[in-house]
Image 1 (cartoon, chains in turn purple, red):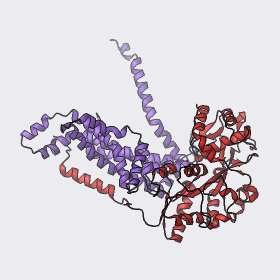
Image 2: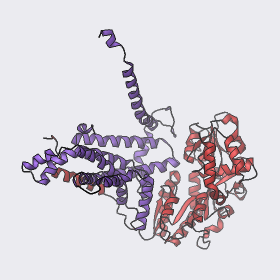
Image 3: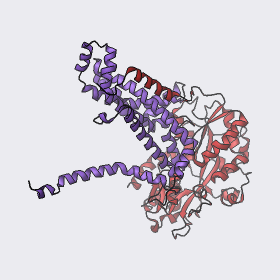
Image 4: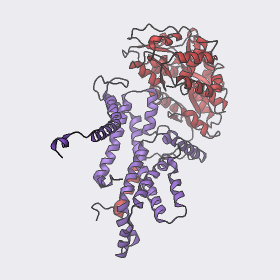
Length: 270
Length: 351
């Protein structure tokens, strides 16, 4: 092949790059626009910006309503992460290893919270809590979020378990490791990618959860998405955009912290 | 083998740490406290004044706790809660939702005037046959407009249909917004035989296209401020609250009249703190509380004895002559037809 032929642009490759570029732009553009709204000083959301100001970030960080709701959202999301990882991983292990009758039906059953509109799940839980006399405690909110977060952990852990080479466990057992030691030193490290990926999903699903929270939050103990929704009805200003930017930074921080602590690069294939 | 293996100890430590973090500080609200009044209330500036001044003062006076829910939707939550132990003791909504609630038995059909002494001092519209409960404030729905677009101040509801405003006029998603619903009934009156002339209203609505539609009044406010629309249906409070901020917007009172957007309080029949609920409504009607909120958010007070400062007195509906101009809609009539109306307007405004 001649040098001139090698330099000729490949239309397929150009189309491929263009499509990828368009997808990346489509994903990033909303974040960029929200970022612009957040630093625009006008008392309403507008584009193009008329200047640069951090007044909306100041409003967000000095508002007790926003700060309390951000703190509550974080607490709930962390609790949901822990619970859904424990429940989802154990369910996945039982479904793959337990020789349970009807395991396919059980898998579909555990995934079913994702099929029901979340607003109905929220309403149903709200009614259940009130009828059983427990009111709307924070743990009830955590349970509601966990209900929709567990399927993510379950699915990602199942994916890992289905590709699991059990001969590694058998080798450890033959070499004298107890079942508990095999689990913690062989099984768990190998399923860790699925569990961690599911846990990240669970955290984000909870942190951004709106339809379920709408019914389960208690007055003066509202999560950030609920506070933002109600704020938007009366004051549609840049504080909403500032709150969104803070949420995005928080989510990114979680991913970066997990990357630093346990290394996520190996799990990108998930 | 794996460089960063998960050991049992590390896992347990991490799990316990995260669980402790999650649980730390979580309010263990397992049982409703005695003498707790559960109410609904708005957010925004109204919510700031309520939570900052009005409710703490009531709690102090009555030795109780007020649990104020600002998270919509109020009515579905009330519907889903037990009738004998409702989630709210006092429901604050606009009039259309109160009518929906009274039909379902979620609020009482009449307040006890003996238990709420300030009821005797309200304007007749606040307890008229168009109201379930009591309207503690009202704002006036009219036309908001930009003053920097070379437009003449609107004088009639018909001005919204000016062809020059194509794509520059603003309305609401009628199924979800009571201002949009009230405007639809007004179109029936202006272009037809009366507020119940839906055929005329639909035809007039069709003629308003292209029109920008919003969910909430807050969004309409910002659309006017950002010049996304030049003229829009809005209540006076949504414009007057920018008084003194040099925003080029103003409020126009159409010659055919303004529509009352009532802020209505009512009691749930199953409340276990009825006395406190009555006391709360009486407190909200007290002249000093009415003045504070009226001047805070530009709402017209219902109590005839309220003396407003000059700039509020000039604009708000606070005299018998002024309140006579308020048009109250028949929400019972509207709610009975709402599903059909929603379908029809969705077809008209589609696209």
